[in-house]
Image (tube, rainbow, N blue to C red; front, side, top):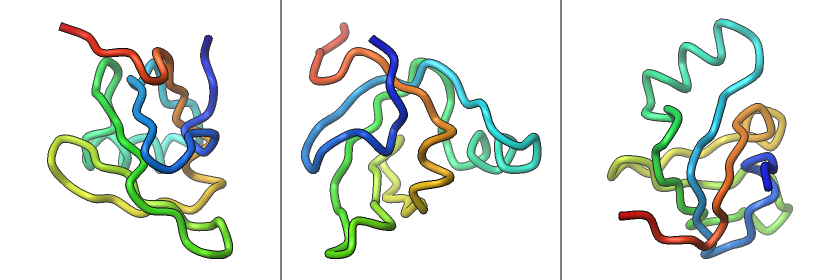
Length: 81
């Protein structure tokens, strides 16, 4: 089931299936490592709930909810080989 990255709870991980936002933001997210097939882990959520920080390819990246919701993920909690 595909869901937006912002729906991941603290400590959950999933795999990026697509990025579907504004072209300039999609390009920036790709530069940061948000690419299809990449494992992403929700590591921190601010007390107010926005922003949240995600571990992607060894880097910890904070995203506002509106930007995180342009990244779609699948396989929540699953391990891939």
